[in-house]
Image (cartoon, rainbow, N blue to C red; front, side):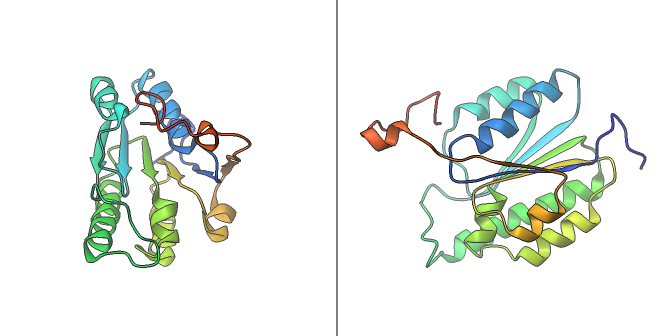
Length: 175
């Protein structure tokens, strides 16, 4: 498939600061305004986030995997592995069908970092990516191999956060 709209790059949003998912959602909102076909796959995210309702209104397809339990990165449960692999299989399926202009893999870097999915499978995904598909990977601790393969990398660094002064996550801002 030929590139359309000059699409087909790989973007990474990583780092320890707040805003990686928010940046990818901003990109999705902008692209939806130009009638691009967008899908987002949430790795390890099924809580009641505000964007879930907004994405539906914008016609952005959302596929969510994970549990409501926090994952212990040193001792993930069987269901954590299963859900991450379901998300990866869904990614492979959507890439194979090639019906989207943009595919956002939200928190995939964390899934790799927690060893829920092997880096090798994600590298293989990049190798099989349709030429015209814009692919966005988010999450802290992005492996160097993915950074090297990406066309755009943004590192979000935390300088200051309200959590540090005891302010809890706020509806509509953090979730």
